[in-house]
Length: 505
Ligand code: GLC
Image 1: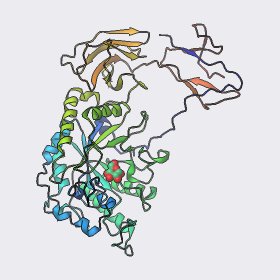
Image 2 (image 1 turned 60 degrees about the vertical axis):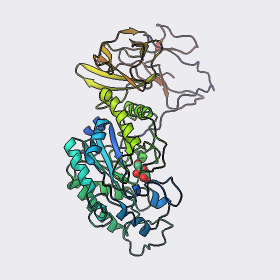
Image 3 (image 1 turned 90 degrees about the vertical axis):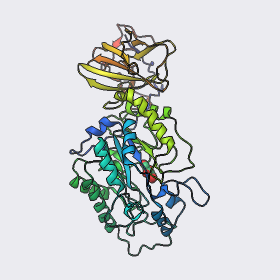
Image 4 (image 1 turned 60 degrees about the horizontal axis):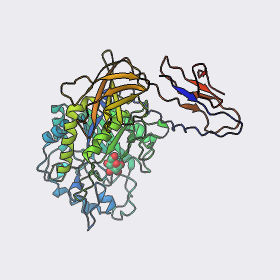
């Protein structure tokens, strides 16, 4: 393969528009003691939003679109909301089946709301009666779920809301809350209360994977308080992973910390997937299966299993984790639609899970037919091509790939029969069976020697996208042994044309 490059003839005052560089997003570097390895290997986890809000199930005074924000959105007075406490009695709660379902779906960790914005704790919380022990259920749900996770080899992690609409010392109050004054409220006392919750959560429930903070955006919270809280948590649980919502630096739903600076270890895009991978940055997209986090019995906007599975592949191909949410019902069961989706994901993961777990981001910037993930194996690399669009020609091109292929086979083929492979000028061509074994995502596993060496179409890199005098223009690096040649007079480059080794002026 001989890539060629034709640079436009440079004429004074000629304006050339080059691709605008992506705004750099730097890693919020994990604290040195943090053990990110299990988290990076996991790639897929279950989020659970559960609390008192499951009782009204999204409905209040004729409106049916509420979720876990119901106290806030419907402006429910505190005393009225407290009325859900005696009604919370999830007698069908079966932690063993929850963990089993998550595990069968290929999820490696569970993050559950130990306390959400409403301030209600699902554990036996020190310093308050506004917890599960005051309900008729009177069972420490976090205890039972964490015990079950430890038993079944699932990582248990706690979501914990900094914002608290119930605690008398939390500030600020909702503007519509006229039934509670703030005269005696002391925010520092609230911080001490949170710390006792967190100490309990990370020391009394066995090994905890993540503290997943949220509700950090109000005026009383900031970078300093976040750093102090993270330091406190690490002082009692040195290896715990903390998300970047522990401090006030998150820049919107994109989920990354402004300037890449955070006391937490990873970024938290919400309901969205970054457009590209972010080398050196750990991130996790959290997403609902329908339109609500907490249970809403009117919400029928379920994402299809196909969409969920393709998003999982997309996220893994960009080097991120997928935290997929379920909002259990007040009786303690998962909604049937969620159970169906977990099962469909599990059926795919049973065959293709190795293309997700312990993989890293795609070495290709884009692929016309789907996504790619990879892992290092003995003697080389295993590339997993996630084929969304099955080629009508029966041939699939792995564009620009120059490595020697040791074997190509479909994970969906139980015998892993080797498929015919040939090297072409454009890359590696693999002959596939006529029909795709999986209409959602068929994974083609390709074992190559060494690290992937991929020749991409030459990319022009320059410090400005407009010039009118001189500009240093260079080319994106290619693998060793590849030379890019160019001309400046509008003709097609040939072997004797200048090689682009130093910047072109
Ligand atoms: C938002 C919401 C919250 C939900 C969270 C999940 O921050 O306030 O209800 O728990 O997203 O990421």
